[in-house]
Length: 134
Ligand code: VL7
Image (cartoon, rainbow, N blue to C red; front, side, top):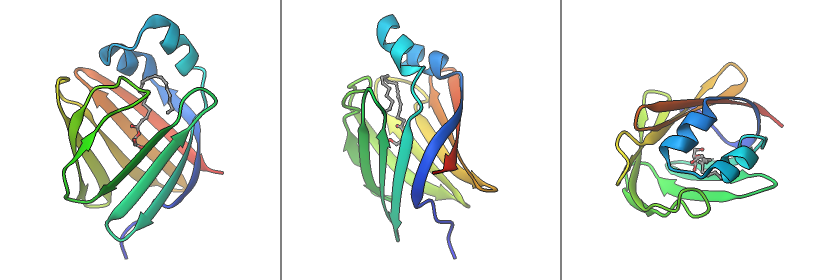
């Protein structure tokens, strides 16, 4: 049985989100608001099809993809840059490469105990987020 990320998840820790946002070129005022947020993720996993809806009191972001199928990602409401994104499995980890203007951009999701982990990467910055089931 493959790992199942489905569920509703609340952010409990957010390490170096500031560095990650700075690498993405997010302006100071937006960073100050964004780093106070406690976003929630609603993940729906159906075979190789995923939707990840990240919501907060400030901005929402919806992502839908299929494993192994490259797609155009617009990052609307985030840094608004377009990427060619591809999500693949690495054992039980979900790995996204976001090819575009920013080097080394992507993220990795995995489960550890009852927690959902997310590493967000851009250039030389790594943000580490942990979520617990709502
Ligand atoms: C999504 C934020 C910083 C702008 C607002 C912050 C609003 C809530 O891509 C992400 O998750 C993946 C993996 O789960 C699925 O899309 C992370 C948050 C990245 C980047 C940009 C700051 C303004 C946060 C939407």
